[in-house]
Structures are given as C-alpha cells and as structure tokens.
Length: 189
Image 1 (cartoon, rainbow, N blue to C red):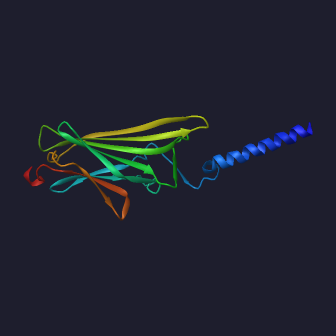
Image 2: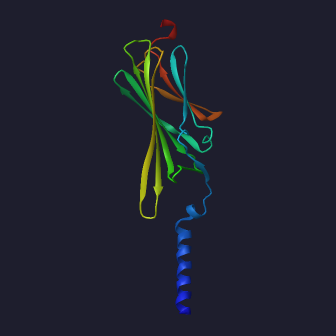
Image 3: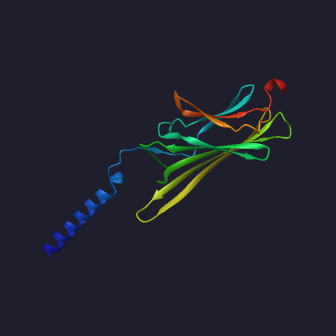
C-alpha cells in the first residue's frame, strides 16, 4: 500500500514537471493582464482640411499600453465609395481578456465612405470586430464582438481616383489617421 502511494506521488510529480515544461507561458506568465470591456473599442473623430477628410482613431485609454496598430492596412473600392481596413493587435507583453476569460487576438476596423447623391455630403460606416480565442487542452473556441456606427458628413464628395492612406504619429502611438481625398475643396461647396 505504501509503495503504491509513493509510486502515485512520483507519477504526479512527473506529470507536474511535464506540465511546467510544455506550458511555461501559462505557469510563468510575464505578460500584463488587461480586461476588454464592451466600451473599450477605439474611438473616432472626423476632421478635415480644405482638400482632405480625416478620421482620427484613438485607442481606448485603458488599453493604449496594451494594444498597437498594425503596420499594414488594406484599401478597396465600393460603388461610389472607398473602404479602408486596419488591424489593431495586443502588444507583445499584453494579455487582454474578456469578462468570460477569452483572449483578445485582434480588432479589425473597417471604414467605408460612400458619395451621396448630393455632392456636398458623404455617408460613412465604421465596423469594428474584436476577435477572441479560448484555448483549452484539446480544443479552442472563438467568439467575436462587433460594433457598427453609421452616419453622414457635410463634406465634399470623396475623390475615387485616389486611395485612402494611413498616417501614424511618432509621438502618439495610440492614434492613427485615415485620410481620404476630397474631389473638390470646401470653399467650392
């Protein structure tokens, strides 16, 4: 009986050592934990100049140290408009969790502008999708949380011949700017 107990304890110690070797990031986590709440999506502010329309995208203040904007973005066309898509990922040492324990993998921000029938206005749509994963021993499950914003702007029609582009700021890593070119200036409205 004593021998079977000592064999069982030795076997449990062996399993624990295998766990420590195979799962070091779980046991010895060096990341900083953050919580993703329903209002932690990036915030937006429309601005502009005489020849361009800007969308400033601000990381939520509670996550600005935990998230980073990706270096790349995608652009595309739609009927009478343009689309620009940007990704936002957790920084290397951050672990952002939802209230139910799912880990944030990315936030996809898609902005679409469509020229209205009136050349002095533009319709916009902003869609943000936060993707989460929960990794178990033998499986993983995924979920997403979505936020959509739509509206209109008193702005000259967008120039469809020029793709939108992204501007970053060396002194503000928590902000990026999407830039869309106007087809004519504000003074001509």
